[in-house]
Structures are given as structure tokens and as C-alpha cells.
Image (cartoon, rainbow, N blue to C red; front, side, top):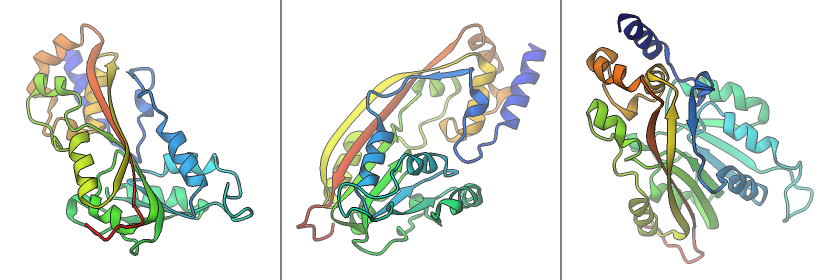
Length: 264
């Protein structure tokens, strides 16, 4: 037990997120995928947009992949026009220099935006054809303000009650229990947007052992705020005896600003 405890402490202490990169858990974490392809949805919408924003870009990895999949020109409208003007935002300060360094060669500006701090989206009224938000919080009223008539919001979110097993084992409460599909749909409608699609999904996330689990908790400390290895050694030893499974929860929403929008 002493050797396991030492490994767990080290794994948890050394786990620091840079950008949005879980590659250090490759081969030790398996996660189901939702039945939809959110990246394909975003790529298609980007290809039909002139101006777009990627909220919560992390280290810019995902946005770079989306841009790499676009043709040089826009389609189907306005043949010959270059790819859309895309601006990214990021709310976690350590990620800002990472994202800026990664996205600058692609001509993408990265702006600071933290919806939880009450920030206003750094875009003029009715200036965006597309807003993408993958696993990032936002104010529905701000998205509605920034979208042009006909402009689209694409968002995929982690349900705030995901991985309830972690709280059963280690205590605490969900940090963002309000992030759920019915609440988001209601907020978007109240902001004056038309919700075109809303669906949720549940699957499984499996950790190879307790060391992979505590490393994951070090990368995403908001899942179990205040988690400390020494407070839960007996539980971790018990869990280490077999693959560890928790419940994933995701939802996605597509919405647009109707031509008759007059503000929330």
C-alpha cells in the first residue's frame, strides 16, 4: 500500500493541463464517443461562414484541426473568397499564451473571455455568422447579441452531473450542476434564439487503474474540488483492483438567431 500511495501522490501532483491535452493518459483511459460528430458539424458550418468565433479554444489544438480540414475558398456561397475570419477566446489564463502561439501562424487572434466572471463577449453586435462552444461556458444573451440574423450557435457540453460515481467515492458536489440540457435550452430561448436541435447522451469512461484516475483528477480538478490522495487512500486501493468505470454525459445544441430577433 505504501508503494501505491507514493505513486498516486506523484501522479496527482505532476498532472497539469496544458492546452486541452489528455495524451498522457493514452492507453490508460478509454472513453465512449457520442453518436454524433460535433467536429464534422463545426467544419461544415465554418465552410459556410464569413466570420466565426471559437469559445474556449484551450490550446488551439481543436481549432487548428478544423481549419486544416477546410478548403482554401469558401463554399457554397461567394466562390473565390478565402476561408472565414475566425477569432478564438479562452477563459483560463495559463492557456492564453499557449493558444496564441499555436494559432498566430493560422492568422487567428485569441482574446480573453471568461463568462463565469461576467465578461462581455469581445465582439460587436450582430457581427458573427457562427459561434462554436465545445465544453465551454457562455452567456446565452451574449451569444445572441453577437450573432447576425440567421447566425448559428453550435455547442457541445459536458453535463454538470457527469461522473457522479466520483462524488460517491470521494465526496463533494458537482461544481456546475446547472449545466444540463433543459436549462441551456430554456436560456437560449429566453435570449431570443431559436433552438433547432437538442439531444443528450450517456456513455462510459474507463480508467485502467487508480493511478490513471488520480492523474485525470489532477488534470481536471473541478470534477472533485479539493481532492487529495491521502484523504481517500483506502477507497483508491479498493478501486485499483479492477478497471474503474464512471458515467460520461454529453449534450449538444444547435440554435440560430431569427431575422425578427429584437434582443433578450
